[in-house]
Length: 196
Image (cartoon, rainbow, N blue to C red; front, side, top):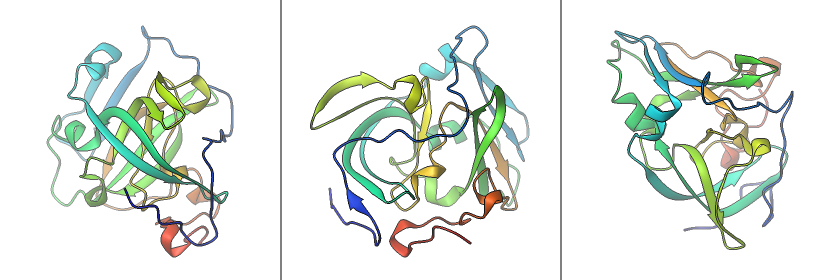
């Protein structure tokens, strides 16, 4: 895997923990994952149903807008493209909003992304990871347990929603949590798209 450091970034072997709000307390009995928006029928998955979906293992590079980059972390999770197969999209769906828990609200956090860029094996809803210094381990709560979205490295990591709770499919792009506060809508670290 290539190690190309985006402008303004430094390399770290650690996986720093950054988030706003409280840490979601997982309850398997009440947790579910929703696929909704511009779809023919909404789909709701229980935790058990979600974890029975096909698994993908992929090694990715992560770049945080706070200037750190971590290379070569391997994740296991559910590819976004496999979740898309569970719904019938309406015509002209080009964007998604990926939601996560924030201050007790299951849709309190969101990140907007173009759907076309998320069709590879590097767009994962992950639940465990490893790297050169750690064997396989579950995400801990501060990293987004039970499920966190990891985007392709062509996006800053704030697009990687922690405590993921659903995907809304959209025909028009809409600002997410950080975008509403002035962060870039496109967030490409190689173009240093940090802010609008």
